[in-house]
Amino acid sequence: MTLTQRAEPHDPPESDALLSVRELHTEFLREQAEPLRVVDGVSFDVERGKALAIVGESGSGKSVTVRSVLRLLPRTARTPSGEAWFHGRDLLSLSQREMRRIRGRNIGMVFQNAAEAMNPTLTLERQLTEHLLWHGICGKSEARERAVRALGDVGIPEPERRIRVYPFQLSGGMRQRAMIAMAMVTEPALLIADEPTTAVDVTVQRQILDLLVGLKDRGTGVIMITHDLGVARYFCDQAVVMYAGRVVEQAPTSELLDTPRHPYTKGLLGSSVEVGGQERPLLPIPGSPPDLAHRPAGCAFHPRCAQAESPRCQEEQELISIGDERAAACWKAETGR
Amino acid sequence: MSDSSRHVLVHADDVTKTFSTPAGDVQAVRGVTLSVRRGETVGVVGESGSGKSTLARLIMGLQPCTSGRVLFDDQDLSTVKGGDLRRLRRRMQMVFQNPFGSLLPHYSAVANVIEPLRLHGIGSKSSRRARAIELLDTVGVSEHFADLYPTQFSGGQQQRIAIARTLALEPELLVCDEPTSSLDVSIQAQILALLAELQQRLGLSCVFISHNLAVVQRLADRVAVMSHGKVVEEGPTAQIFDAPQDPYTQQLLSAVLPVTA
View (cartoon, rainbow over the protein chains, first blue to last red):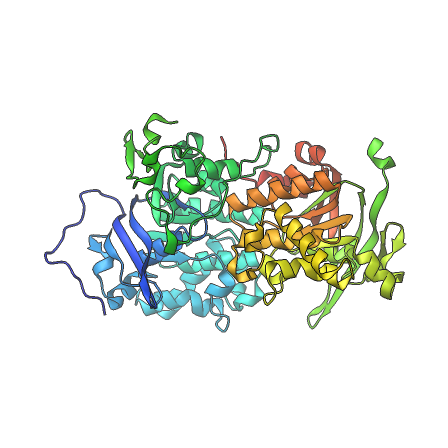
């Protein structure tokens, strides 16, 4: 289905990252209009045993970014361009047939709403053993053993009995754990989690994150999409902040949150409420995120930016390196103002 | 305490709500007693399924209590009928989690705000429109967009329109059920700032339901913590957050993940 449009074969980057995404672009076709560019030149690395947070508001392109890498885009999307190196292969140049051999086996996926992501008509046993059997990883009886073990690992009590139930017979928190078990049963090297704790309560959130910390410790690389900066700080080593389809800032998570450099990151922090921070005045970002069909010229954030007073803000902003590990797409970022 | 001398606007007195389901009875609210004084904001926190939203509907009189009673300005909601109930309902309004679901999709923004005024026969056709536009302006929706339909607004703007509509009848009590949970953080901050400002300016009494402890800490004077249909702890906000007594409250607070170091 996919045609590789490159004239010459290309080589993987020299970095030893588990996943290296370079210059990812994804466009959606529209009727009687130019294609809509939803992801616009995104690059990042995910290391083994580390977690990367992708932070941003709805419509910023977070989910489309990971779905591009997974090649799980709707039919209205064009095949993404750029590179996504994983185990020495560029995922963006593979056919859907080849991708099917990787998804579920080498890359696990956890979505926000387990009730929608699981098949309501199949028992947990069917859903947990499916990956193992389909990929030919093991036989039926071993698959069942591994599925029971995976359910136990995610803290589901009585896994031997629970494996026979249907998703609707579990509470939301238990269902979310079952989905993580489903993603982990094949021991994938990379786990992609799209808002995995948004629909669960704080105490369950903490348990699920601690579960994922255990996976990280065993060497699994994780991409976590989240809008919750507390979750990012707790779980993720690195973070990229997306706005209007582009990365506007990237840094180790604690540095990003302690000393944000891009005005949008500062705005996100000023907007967040946290326990114990009730005396700090709320500083909402005015306006709303841009409609991508009418992307503001230059820095897409400048119409909402409190610090945009220079004509330079109406020019395109490239990511500028700040030290070894950080970058921000704002000409003011270098000076830290 | 000087607060206790203030007049109680709404009082839930040992209310219980039991739903009958094919799988048996579910006790959503089990013997809750809660008062809201005039001008006060009471936060209700707890996990999903703890009975927060059911309690809100009982307080609003949208569902009858299985036992116990709700007194609004000393009147038992279950004994008030017909026109009297309608007049009483004017004094209490609700803001829901999903703003789109609570607006009429085939009515423009301004028509949505006019509707409660029309139903209660307030003003003339032209004065109603003028008042609705004024209300939209109060919540930060420009007159310029008043004739657009709900789908043409973002989620945050829709919630502003829904809030303008609740204010149309100049209620004394506002019940907010997770009003910012479906919104992005930058928009959540805008709506929280708006609610805090309106509450102060209009002297509204407020029940604020949320699973987000930080939001409740910011807005509430007092907090009730719910678990399995019961209020396990209740008190002034600072006391609940600084020195939680109940193990469940302690557990909730210890699961909070800080954003700043």
